Image (tube, rainbow, N blue to C red; front, side, top):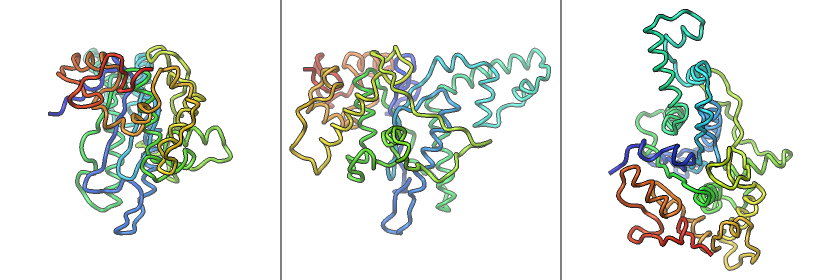
Amino acid sequence: MTSARRMLIDANTTPFYHVINRCVRRAFLCGEDKLSGRSYEHRRGWIVDKIKALSTIFCIDICAYAVMSNHYHLVLKIDVDKAKSLTPKDIISRWYQITKGHAIATKYMNGDALIEGEHMLLDALIAEWQERLSSISWFMRCLNEEIARKANREDECKGAFWEGRFKSQALLDEQALLACMMYVDLNPIRAGIANSLQSSDFTSIQERLNALSPNSLTPLSTQPPVDNTQPLPHKSLAKFDGATHLHQQTGIPFHFADYLELIDWTGRAIRHDKKGFIDNLRPKLLNELGIESDAWLLSAKEFRRQYSGVSGRWDAMCAFKHKQGGKWCRGKSHSQALHPEQINGLTLL
């Protein structure tokens, strides 16, 4: 039985979430259909452009993404403080970029006088819109509806384009966030469609590497930004700020140099043409977090399979499930609980 989205996403518990959505009816999100010979590669740009545009509207940052042939992955961070700091006019202005809004809000923005009843209605609207601007569900709704409409128009058909509502995983601690971002960024390499980070098209790691080397930029899309009003500037990816704790930072709690070292080491280790050899020099982040190499590589390959709607320390996962009304957690296996000395199924040294 599926759970209500409000039970699976709780920004007060953790701001970080992994979301995934898949196409239905064997539809191609992008890539090339070998049966018809038709290319849908340009649709990758639709996803990247749209998430960047929506990130400028919503109080949600993009930590990682990977756009595959019939599904995509996102690691998102809810910026609760940003949402709370928005003024009424900020809220209305942002909301109007994705919907038609409301006549009372338009009247307010135009500087027209409001009667008491209109003020009460406006306050209720602003409160509702403010909450939605930090909602992953609304972010995903705006993303998926736009892509589905465009794809159906292009395919000249009607009906559902997505398999169903998106799946989400709460990332409760630094280890969970790190493992999930690595899993997302290495998707093309695991799938065998890329053999290096630089050639992993339409991933956040390629974008970050391109930002370091402007002369080697690979265009993510030839499509213009998708928006209902006017083109929006694309927001950059969430920054690595190097903080030591998940809830004591404004970005991603690692240094990018350390993340790059670890993802390069992990990518070389899991490539099919690099079997049997791993450099004995363990990356700095593995040593700092106390994670065994073999357990880390397993997590980088099978993060999605190892965990259900939540990932983190075993006690934190159980607490999260209990708070949301769940009765059990899935860790490293369906039938066995992880030992207290294990984190995310990654055995501590």
